Amino acid sequence: MAPLDDRFRRNLERILARSGRSRRGLSAAFGRDSGYVTALLDPSRPARARPTPTDLLRASDELGIPFVELLELLWDVPVERLVDELIALGRAAPPDAATRGLTSADRAELAAFRAYLADRAARRQR
Image (cartoon, rainbow, N blue to C red; front, side, top):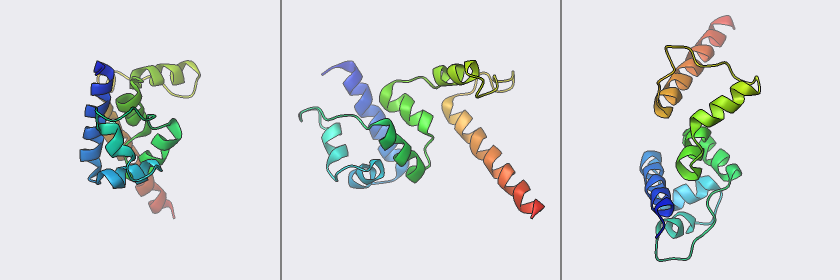
C-alpha cells in the first residue's frame, strides 16, 4: 500500500475519532452512502474517490472541523499554502508576530474565539 494511502487512512481515522461519529455518521456528514468511510478505511477494498472539496465543506459545517484542516488532512494541502495564497490575493492579512508559529489546531481555536467575541459584541449592540 502506498504511504500516501496509509497517511490518508490514519488522518481519516483521526477525523472519525474527533468527530465522535460512527463511520456511517461520518459518511453522512460527507453526504455519501453509509459504507463510504468504511470502504475508504479498508486497505483490502478497491480504492474509492476521496471526499471532494464540496464533501469537505459539508462535513466542516456539520462537524465543526475547519475546512482548511480537512483539506490538509485528507488532500495534503498545507494550511500555510492556503494562507500564503490568500495573502497574495489580498483576501487575508499576513499573520502578525504573535500568531506566526501557530499550528492549524491553534489557528482554529483562535478563529473560534474570535467568532465568539464578535458574536458577543453583536449581542451587546442589539
